[in-house]
Picture (cartoon, helix red, strand yellow):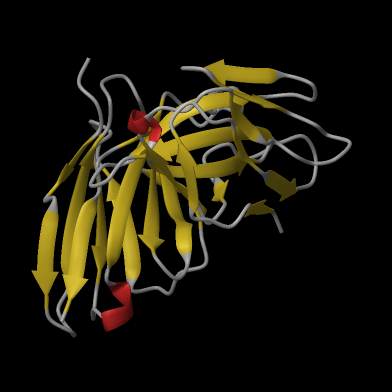
Amino acid sequence: GNSVTQMEGPVTLSEEAFLTINCTYTATGYPSLFWYVQYPGEGLQLLLKATKADDKGSNKGFEATYRKETTSFHLEKGSVQVSDSAVYFCALSPSTNAGKSTFGDGTTLTVKP
Amino acid sequence: KAGVTQTPRYLIKTRGQQVTLSCSPISGHRSVSWYQQTPGQGLQFLFEYFSETQRNKGNFPGRFSGRQFSNSRSEMNVSTLELGDSALYLCASRTSPEVSSYEQYFGPGTRLTVT
């Protein structure tokens, strides 16, 4: 079956530091890949997406590139802010069944001033 | 455009009881999926509905069921509640079940506590 493995957290960074959260996946075919963010007490918000190999998703300074050869979709941001503190989830949707997403365990990011 | 709404936001139930959770998708969205989020198991897919029909189902016991109405609103029901059913239940909507319609929009969730 499909699976998503995320870098274990929690991750604590100082403001303006560089962020990388690793994500690798196992899936048949060509899934779409996503990063979601969850703030305390809220549901998940779509942060960025990529639907095919070599696509780069980007939003709010965050980026991730769909690497089929390494089955990875690592999240990066050049300079984090305190407001980026949240839980980040990597997810995939199968090409044949987009509504049945598989999520990683989530990585908690805390950014200190 | 209003987002996905879920009611109630918080629930406390006793073991053995049953519970019904409600989800109203974004206007124009016809596909609704449900997920269970727990600290131990993470986010797990429960089921997806489109046009009042269940299209996909995750690996949950038959105590978990759902339905969708003609206006695309969806409900999920859990019967004979167990302590392990305590979780955040998230609903997500998308425009249709087509493969190209992959973006899901999540509601804030219903926090269920079983005592």
